[in-house]
Image (cartoon, rainbow, N blue to C red; front, top):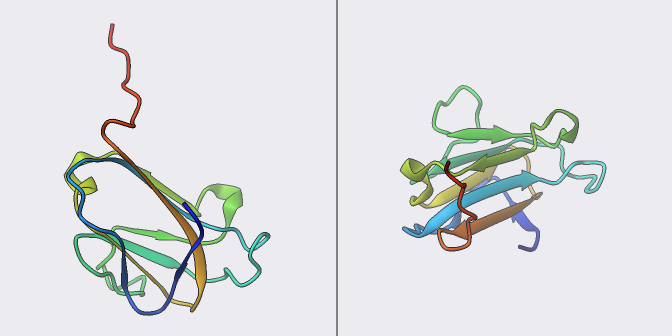
Length: 111
């Protein structure tokens, strides 16, 4: 999926999808996009508030790629079917949002 821009106003990035199998949100590191210096807040089902103390978010990402803080990935069916909302505390943060449907997710072999 192409780069998308997250601003300071909450925006729906992936609508409700009952067939979603996985979802990955990645903030592009500032070593690639110099302006990516803020935090991106994500929430399923409703809009988050861009504040660490608000408690209204499901995950928070930063641009620091070295320790994995710039990537969120889930296959949790309880939240995956809901819409994904993102907001940033700093304007114009670039992210990738990639989702697969259930028929695209490889099955795990059982023994």
